[in-house]
Image (tube, rainbow, N blue to C red):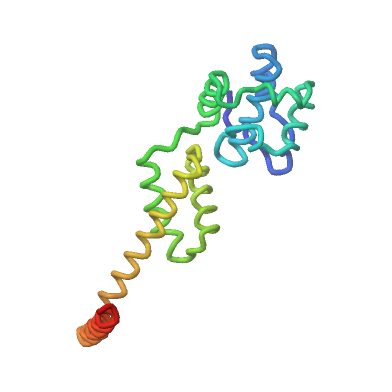
Length: 195
């Protein structure tokens, strides 16, 4: 099966490729066919898989159900964390060339964010969006929100440390001594207030 034929063209977002419809036809119960296609759509659109029905766009459910000729209510019967759903996710990763994101991948992401994104933008939403785009571009399944957030926070913290270190290294010795003197005065004032 040609992987490129499983991706959505920008002007054809609501049509399931015939190859994929043929793949699910007759080999799965109707609820599983719908769940399989919903997971396919979610992986293409967001880079990850839904953990429940609430994670899905209602329009996708009705559109895909219509193309399958089944009721959209069947989406409620699909067990999103069940054995069949896990098998479907593995199959979709293989079909689309995606793989799960490892700790090594997250380290690469952090390095890329520090090197390419954070020198230009530090706004949380922008950095988070760039991280998701990088993962999808590299055909890595977007990790859980918590794991992705930790990676973005780690990149922001490293960028801040590196920026401050570079800044301090550029200061002349007299300026560094003057700053140290100011900090000593501030420490003495804080200590006297506590006494």
